Amino acid sequence: MGLFQKFKEGLKRTQEKLTQEIKRIFTGSPKLTVENIEDLEAALLGGDFGVALTNQIVAAVRKEYETQGHSGASVFEIARRELISCFPETSEGLRGTEQGVPVVVSLVGVNGVGKTTTAAKLAYRVGLEGHSAMMAACDTFRAAAIEQLKLWGTRLNVPVISGNYGADPASIAHDAVSSALSNGTHYLFIDTAGRLHTKSNLMQELQKVHRVMNKKMEGAPQETLLVLDASTGMNALTQAREFNKSVHLTGLVITKLDGTSRGGMVTAIQKELQLPVKFIGLGEQPDDLQPFDAKQYAEAIFGE
Image (cartoon, rainbow, N blue to C red; front, side):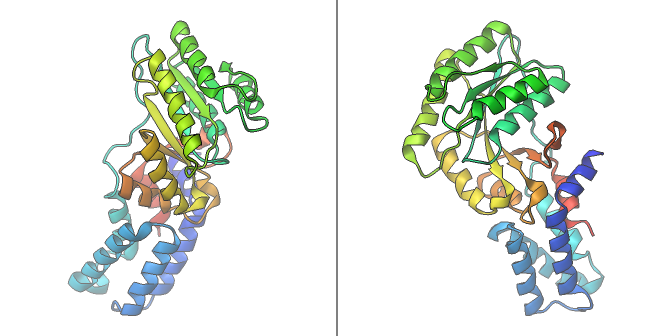
């Protein structure tokens, strides 16, 4: 299956809901009415595009109707154009490797968003690109978290650094950086424990993990990716705000986009926080984590 087809399949629920609503609102309507505008706003907000982008799209639709009438660009074309404008022209992947210096990627987020699976899928991706990978099981609290990462490690032939349950996550992270340095590993993926962004003690613990890695290797972690579950909708924006206050986020990974009709939240977060969306999860298989592409995302959501 091609990349665009994966986007289309993954975002099918969001696309179907929006297409149905927009067609209902504008089919047979020769001019724009207050009711049309209100219904369009409700449809976009229902898809979790956020207030800012919703207003941007509505303003563009209004302007098009005022200048071109019903013969101008379709609402779908306008929405695609406005959505694409929210993202940088080129997508950002993982930071490139330097000779002898591993790129440490810390995966952070609340419970249940898919950090462990994302660590494994990223390790799989860099392996396909010819890079060596290592993973560190720094979630020493969740039952079976270490076993889950080790299982992925066995499946992908990627070494996993781990300790006992209840061990200090910072100590495991330290050992993992040491191992990555001594083995000349290209990428080290740190699977951190899920933590509520509202719990200051847990956020401080995450800061400690990062401090310890930085002491061992200056600049680590070079990437801190916040993993977000698309089905949480606009709650993900709150998580992104709070995590970004505690640790310097370098990008986002949006998981479970294939199971939600609220795929617009990707844009809402990008528009407010200007954090690059680096990867999106469109399924369960290792290759279902795909680099984010704004044009394909827009086409998949607002394709007619």
